[in-house]
Length: 192
Image (cartoon, rainbow, N blue to C red):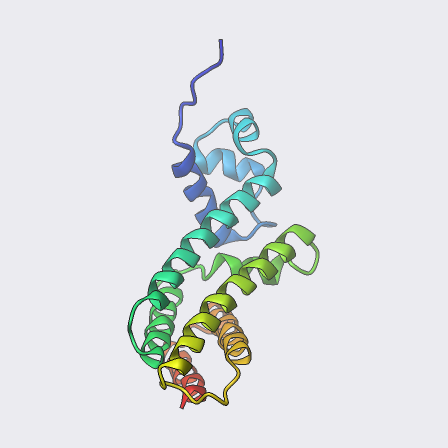
């Protein structure tokens, strides 16, 4: 007879996600996970696999949520300039909040992507997804006359994605909200 799980898998995954986000992969031991999550070592192994598998599962969950939010932000009828401005404001507010450990994807890209093929592949796929959302919205903005048709929506999308990465790293390293907002406003000028 199989045993019934004595914990909520989604809740534990969210807790692991926040632990990895705060400490990073390398500075979170499996013992830390067992202790902080209140789940036995064997239950964690049985449910998620090893630390790497748990990390990848938590990272995918984080990315899926983020992509849903980005899709909603850019799927509405808000003018493109206002949509990007709102996106930057929300991102900066979240990453500069007191005690914010920053963006798990960006933290993972910096910490693991150079040495971990799985994380690098996930980062690349995530980048293409976000860029695709941006390209769609920018192309629509061109068709609606919001931005000049001579601008390359793919190049603009990539520029905005790279800007997001830079802002995320700077927010974690420097935390200067005013300078990040200034950078975001300057970046928006490419739409003029």
